[in-house]
Length: 131
Image (cartoon, rainbow, N blue to C red; front, side):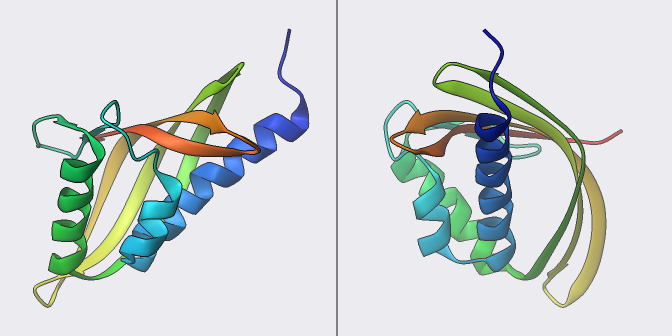
């Protein structure tokens, strides 16, 4: 059975909320988009895999503390939905200011979501440098 348009749009919106939280540098917003469990997984570009929400949360807090600005342009978005699980692949074109220096770079990202009631929560985020 193919997913309906409303489900795909709902997953797309959840992915956008993830990037809105990331760009806001606001931990409360990031808390709201993740499944806060031991099965959560995060791989930041160049980092080892981080497993479990407490450790993942600490990693985001460290990133947020080190950045003054994060702006995302998300493109080449592909959404796959199967039942209560879905994933989004995309390219993140990022402009950031870290330690007073502006930086621009691209990341290939995969965000995996699980359905929680009427919403979707991030269960895994994997980012790799774009070559």
